[in-house]
Length: 575
Image 1 (cartoon, rainbow, N blue to C red):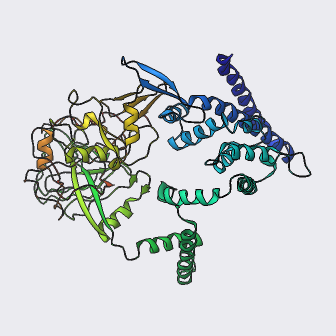
Image 2: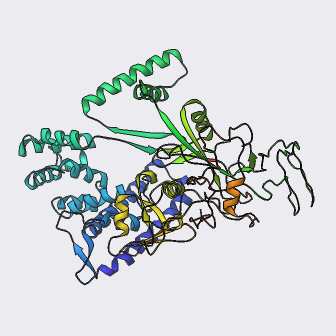
Image 3: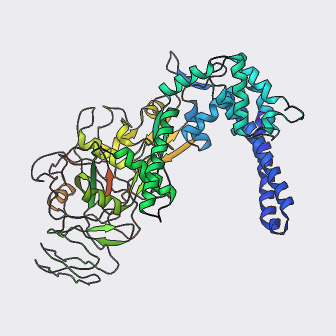
């Protein structure tokens, strides 16, 4: 019987496909009443499907794996009402959802299979939403079984004078109050004890990417603190609006919160700029041919055609669209497909940056940070053949700072599918266990502590491929691929100069004051570009990556000869 579930679901999906095509064709000719009835009918099906999935998750969330005495993998089952360790990771990969969503739904599912079992019925009938059941589960989270049973009986009972259950008739606010009134009668003092735990353990401040160029700052604070903080934000916002009548309420409050948070605080930032060196044609308007020799100080106009054997001397100027340095190094903006100035001004063009859990920061803002704030800037030369920073190898287990920096700036976040924990807060995991695998970028990836444990858990599989992709396979057989955030397609033709020599001798204009003399031996920085180049580009644009852990001793290139493969991405990812 259980093996018939997939066939039944296929029939439902086929029915929904017919419904979709019918609605797309005939909906414009229907009145509001008919459209509303159809929307309600489809919603009922969706809620019923949620109930079926939660019934399956109630059991799947209890399944785990452990290693037996003989080294074999054994399947385990957690007690009723409990979620097995790492089960949520299996569910997240299978359903293609975030860890948070998988964990939230798993906790609800196991409770619906235990003390909240009667609540599955109204969801199965399509009378309530999954969110409504989650509210009841949250309100009874720390309650005793008897108190939870009393709440369930109360919300399923009809309201006075009607035959409609409270769980269907009440809105979220009234339903929460109904649950709390029952808990007050059955478990006196529960509010004080729960509030104490929440204020001690569950207060936090988090960031999430908002609309492009913005970040959502979410704070869970003690209630009285939040009340006073919001009053202060509103007061400062009103003052800003008095000075600027065109300023809207929302932006005024956002600026007011920043004023309060940064008042009396000195902020120091660190920006790492990855500047690619380019060989070969990078602009449709320019052609390079064999025998063309470039010399120090040469500049040139965009669109200039050069012939074989042409030699350019110092003082030969280049203009619009192309950049140059004393050694002829150039950088390309993949976003705009044009050459950009990284020359003698010492102010390189800066691309936008995607920061994990923060969002996208425009290049103009990054440039302002570099110019106006107390910022330390590190510039790193990227290998022209691979697009990544040269690194040195090590025979030890612990990655040296240069290798750690390379992996952190290449991956930027945990390599588990769907995880957004910044790489600087992650472990560096050896894909092939040391000493069988080397301690180098090609064998290292950033994994947060939780997913580091998942990788080593029984029945899980993790492979770091040569093209930079990471392949995960869950115990349930779900396969997911992730790619490093910073990609560098290696489409340029091989050059005669060795990569380590190129990084040592080709510089990008006047050194920044924070950059040490490249001639002194030091560790090479790990920085790669943060945007995928356009197909016709032969290098990656200058990229800025925020990293508070990068030391001031980082240099622009490595003068060492013991370079190794460091996990360059051979081809662009399929997206």
